[in-house]
Length: 457
Image (cartoon, rainbow, N blue to C red):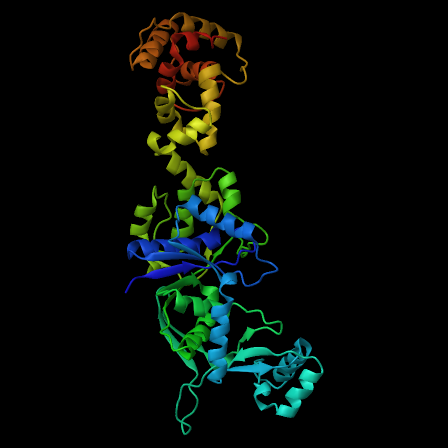
């Protein structure tokens, strides 16, 4: 069997890190099983779905390193869903209901007062042809519900309404259909809710594994029954825990909370996002993983906790720094060129400054310091100014070797008697204008003798 997974968001907003978690779980599962990844847009809500969001989601996935094998749109597949509806009607498991929302709400309240679960009582199944004709004469149009099954198969035995499956993440799972209302598959206006198109597409597209958030566990019980009603083998299901903010709040596409777009614009590296999105809330330590292949090796759906995964966005910056501090020049060369960092000095410059970057764009400031000198001239005491005068007088002539910083500071120490912070801090401030930063032993050869002397206070 070819493993086929799908990521199926509604294109009603930008995806956030929680959505990315689902996409990455599916992508890594496909990688580990040499399978296919389908990007499917559940865009049957024509009013709210936008092509611009579909395009943006694809861009965000590509930025993360996810490249779908196919891209599908449910809005282009209504004929397939219509055919499935006719099959369900013919099988007698899709029935017309004429209640208004107000009538349904009143029935739920009545059931609660009687201590009964507020589920739909299947009153529509008892309607006579005369009542149906009367509703239609009043202009009512039906919505259509799927008749959830009773699995006993024996009228002398009590009903058995439980759905069981082995979940990739959560292990053995059970949903009791008796606790649920027969789901509406088709609205009064003829538009589809989520359930039917999702199941039909999973069948038609050969989806073998459905990996998604654990807010869909109950849906899965209904969908397995629908797969069976359509004479199809259900896929293997896996339900991972959801990501929340550190305070426990859920994420939403509509609010743009921690959207992939905003994280990208904030200078976060894609593998920092991927590392956190995949590893948080699992038995694996959250660490900066440099590439998708290594992340796939660490990925195990069964290692995911059942409880919600709270994460602190500040962790992204910790991971971001860790990635940048070890990133080879070959991976950033083109991006540095875009930032204006190029030429023979670009690689040694990168190796010198990468250990001090929070974001890649921070390299621009150090490039300017290297090329132009301190961005702001620091103030020095008279003693430090005299010290620096002596120090710059001792700057060796070129050509310089790789030990120039050690050679120069050795002469300064011998001539002035200064050492430690009293020696190094004034030099650092004079050369860079900042009290901390890359090793001066790495920067000094890039400045050259002329560039170094130009920084003399």
